[in-house]
Amino acid sequence: MGLKAVPKLTIDLKEFPEQDRLPVFRDYVAGVFDINPLPGHEQDFDVRGSAYALGTAVLSEWQHSPIHIAGDRRSSALQSEEIFVLSKNVHGSQAGTIDDVHFEKKQLQLVAYDLEAKISTETTASHVQEFALPYSEVGYDPSVNSRFLHLDQNSPVSRIVDANFDLLMEIIPESTPLEAVQLSKGFGSLLKGVLADSFHDDTVRDHFARAREAAIRRFVRQEIKNPNLTADRVCKEIGLSRAALFRIFKPDGGFKRAITKLRLNGALAELARTSPAHGAIQRVARNWVFPDQAHFSRLFKESFGFRPTDAVGVGLSNSYEGAKASFLSIRSKTAERRRLVDLFSFDPNKSIACMTTSLGSKSE
Picture (cartoon, rainbow, N blue to C red):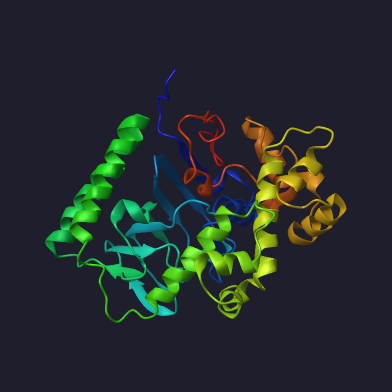
């Protein structure tokens, strides 16, 4: 039987005890953003919203209290192609930096930004709508295009995009998965056409270096389960010096540490999807290039604060209460299965029973 509803994740923190709301939401957006309430708003921290999987794209809508948002794809769990985002504050505003360049986002203003960039921003209490899709769908190239773009609210381009964005938000919840994918592709084509000439910005520096770094990190993510992934191999494949490679991975603590972190994150996600069985941890450890189980367990505990045995099967429960209890038992450090990042790797050919339940309300 075909799916009758668009794959969806929802959240409403009012359903959780006050002390659990921040860790719950931080885990929900883990791998995409790091979230913290602004000083003075810790006690009234609140978020509610939904996100829909539209083939290769994700459409989302959030309402939240004042927060600080940080994003850095160098530490991201996203394994898919680099992501481009169209965003609008229906209410509220934000200001911050993208790759150390200051920006402001006012109410009702459309902006476009590169999720590959290093992002740090503070927002007022806001209602935000976003449409995220791969670079290729909109023709974005970080080697020649700006990381951040304001769309003039009064321009014909902005008005066309805004009207269609509003229509997309209205139609998607009532669409079938096939209709949602078609609508997403149509909207992506619109963006590609009307924004093609808008991204060029001669003042944006170091585009080539950023594009090369993106290519290197993409290659590393693709080869992360290859035991022969070494610094020498990356340098040979990409065509750069060891010194340049080490400079790129210096913020990660070095190339070797970055590889270990990616593999541990992958092992954590796989353990969460693995049924408890004899030899399960050893099998997962070897799959992620940790031949010594004792060494793997020690690194795992140091990285996440709990043992591999605590993560096994945590993402298998389909019941709301069971999933909520499993999550709260090891808090935001677990590989809790209902995450925004999961929508970017949604496979319509597989069951989505685990994707259509809500963190903050019972299954739909």
